[in-house]
Image (tube, rainbow, N blue to C red):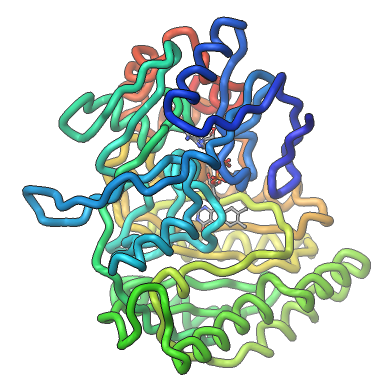
Length: 444
Ligand SMILES: Cc1cc2nc3c(=O)[nH]c(=O)nc-3n(C[C@H](O)[C@H](O)[C@H](O)COP(=O)(O)OP(=O)(O)OC[C@H]3O[C@@H](n4cnc5c(N)ncnc54)[C@H](O)[C@@H]3O)c2cc1C
């Protein structure tokens, strides 16, 4: 059976696919694969652009390991610790949390990923004070190559914990994940088209002054769509239910970003036009950028963070030192202008604080994430090659789940804790049962 990822960048034929329904069945599946001499990889939502989940061995799908196990209070901090099956999708997790008056502290653009897949590749959102999903992990259950389950926390099996909370599944199969949730909150969202120069002149203040700031820049134009979100107390609605007025406003705003900008039929049509008639792209982008009108609304956090992305695309995203963001965008702009490259998709720019997760793209430095995206029917190689040259010149670190060409030598210079990661991985999986060509490329 052929397996293909969401972006249609990876296609493989595993020797078999299995979908265990319990941790015991998962352990058995791993033991069986090892006995037969097959490598093992887990696939989550298949939303990585990189071949992270690819294998010609046994591919495990944990969609049935998606139960809520427990909600408890951290005895020291009083914070909510929520343990769920590792295959749980983020949209399910968001709903379960909302029903309990809780929320993820921060989220990325979509909610289709599995929790394990999202943390394993360093999935992140935006916000100068709010790190990626892996920074919220407080415990893991990991099935090793012998099928045994090891519990790892910051204090128990510390190195295995650090290597596994963002480790591309290279240390074993995560069967459950404990995350620290926060009390439910709403986001007051302001979405406005701005001249790009206004954004770039004030970018560091915008990042500092807003809980969650990001922008989309339309190449070949000097226009950007800015998104500023402020965290506020939840409104009168409770749980996952929205009041009808709030729902209407949130719906209108979702329509704005989803339907007008990124994911709907109209955007599909403009991308098809740009594919058939490349010369129209700058005009289409200028129209799209100018057509945007300002919106303000308030809704529960996960409804604001996550959108539907229905127009298929390919993506490369690099984490660069935050201080380099203006220079990097200027270089991308000048490359696009000098080549006239056909780029109907906007460039997405987000921000994160420095964190301490060994393989986090934001490890030890304040970060700007710059994502170049291309409509899937258009070639992306020349664009992404040029972008990658610009990103790597400032010490950029590629998103582990997105397209890039970096190898373990390059990444060793970027990740001070890579030797620690390798030691923990060698102890957990000495024979490389959980390796695939991608982990060999990036981790050695
Ligand atoms: C439309 C779209 C929007 C996106 N938006 C964002 C965004 O806003 N921010 C961002 O940072 N990224 C974003 N991404 C990237 C995405 O979040 C990551 O690629 C993520 O890994 C996908 O999760 P998944 O469940 O699909 O994992 P998969 O792609 O299926 O797997 C990812 C990795 O996790 C491993 N893995 C999965 N489950 C387990 C397990 N139980 N145990 C051990 N290893 C496991 C796999 O083997 C693989 O190495 C986006 C991707 C798409 C297609």
